[in-house]
Image 1 (cartoon, one colour):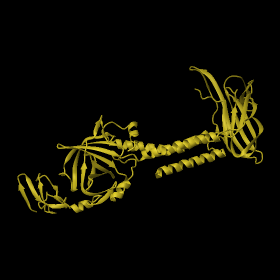
Image 2 (cartoon, chains in turn blue, purple):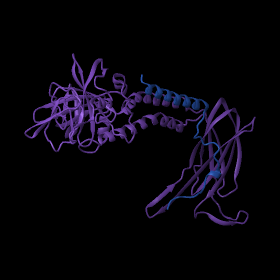
Image 3 (cartoon, each protein chain N blue to C red):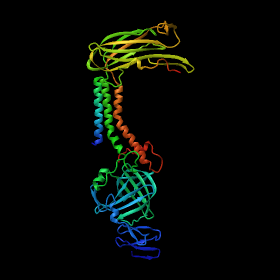
Image 4 (cartoon, rainbow over the protein chains, first blue to last red):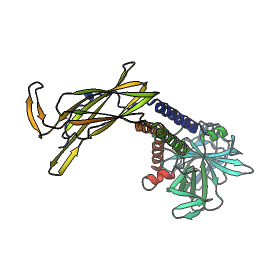
Length: 48
Length: 448
């Protein structure tokens, strides 16, 4: 097995590990928590 | 310097070795290489003198003549060296010799090395391509004139500076098939690109520089990125499959709890507490599906908070449900979403209250508009309340996590693919014929 294949396999294992950890903890950096109405700028239809 | 003349040919004695050299263009030629010792002689000077001695010249060679090295299990000795050019590029060729295996060529160009073998059989023609041992070679350079510019050492034919041949080259990744022809003969040479480690180990030359964007690779140099893409592809596929399985396994949600409250459009904000919502796992996400099925020509702001009864820690999220419709010259239109699904991440185990703050607003011209002195805005009266329903489920499927992980997994192969395309474009830029396209990039991925 070449070094590049080994390093890439290691990288993929790292990603899998992080995904597994995030899934088991119910974590996501893209979750909706902590957003509030103040974030929303304008209301009303955009139709022209 | 002893010299004599016979007709238009002048004989010059080499000051280095004493050998007689014919000077055919006397009066025009300014320098002459001794065919016996390789010394370069200045014949324009009345007392012909040596410009470069053979020993000095060969000391500048990457592989001094006489050096032995083992390539592919055979020990070769470098016995001759010549430099050639086709007007665009120049390259060096070392003639290698082994008494049991004959001759080979070691070709150096742009810091890369190839081992050339003279073929004893003419390759089979197949359309524009040639076939050698079932391997297909595509046209690359068409009928360039290759001319010898310098040479030293021994050769198996009478080679001299200025000798020209018509050369055509056909390539496949890692190999080049070269046809050379002059008025007397036509020969075929099969060159194989040598890995940097091979040539360094064999002859101790400087390590070839790896290709970087902006450099020109050899016509037959295999893409260093193709092997990585091919080696990484099964790992990437297995990882993506594992990610998908994990997404399915961990993405389930528990039994839903449903809560609802009515909100009057343009009325006061409504705040209500529901619960309890129990989270039993050590840490768990919560999915909140917020629906306002009858909101029309308006919007509803819904702030939801899950408040831990013991610690009073609050985990907040916000939904904006809206729906608008109308008619214009293009027909009817509608926009907005009456439902939002919120996912709150990583809540610690415990018992929570669901605190909902909702306020509905109306937009448009329907209803009875009255100026409200207290708020300083127009208020609509007589509109039915908007129903806000909230479905709470323990657990959440974060597709965003999956796609982010997918991006991380595919990023290195995609980077390699981009570099492979850049490499192939730089390689094929030298090709005689049309510009490179996707089929050329795929050809560059083929096994050598």
